[in-house]
Length: 315
Ligand SMILES: Nc1ncnc2c1ncn2[C@@H]1O[C@H](COP(=O)(O)OP(=O)(O)O)[C@@H](O)[C@H]1O
Ligand SMILES: [Mg+2]
Image (cartoon, rainbow, N blue to C red):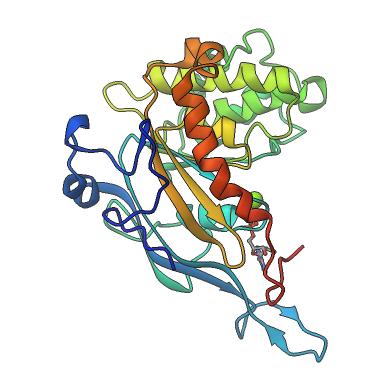
């Protein structure tokens, strides 16, 4: 099993990518590890254990499915990490555990030194499908987490206006889900998540359902918000799940490649592209650094297509 505990990471060597922030980045390995905001330590997730609604083999016996095996990652505050991997390698399961929706069956997850509580007001979760409430307007969807926090109506209204403005939806405040395009729905979902100003953003393939053009626009807009507008002195910590390697390299500070059967970390690389880069995404994609980084990671990701015959890939 690959160990990725912050000091011992695997990676194909390349001039443009490094394993971890080095002294040259002003962050020492040790510091990055000890100051991690999110610590994922030897985490496993086995489904189908006794007492769980499991999967059943031909003989009707509960069968275990190891969704994640011995995953370790240390994520410092403010880092934008992309998890890339084929379907079924446990990306969503990992995000759910970070959100506190599921406990690891082995190992531990610590956020700011303690297991993620539920509900966790400091974590925002954006899904692939927008998950907007269809009977609420865009504004009322954005205000939902603020209602949970018992903000006054006036404060909620001001905040929802700001957030919808930030994601380019001024004038659409009173429209319902059905009146909005898929791209606009994802914008509303993003505005809703940002409204509560969480310090950690979990994003599960947030742009996967969009057409190529809309996807590029939203990638740039999201990155602009993250790089420039949000968080003041400190950017939000982002764990961004995607199966699109180019998207991962384009957006993230660090790309973690995962492989399935069982879900595990295969590679962990720092992306050595300058920030802010939101306004230059078009140019960034044609730089040698970008191409070499994608290429180096792709070789490892290709292995994800292989399926070991003794393991079930799941649905
Ligand atoms: N609640 C569950 N019960 C049983 N198996 C599950 C459950 N959730 C996910 N799995 C299985 O765990 C593996 C990882 O799933 P998932 O985290 O959704 O992968 P990804 O998001 O990378 O596509 C898959 O084989 C999936 O079928
Ligand atoms: Mg998933």
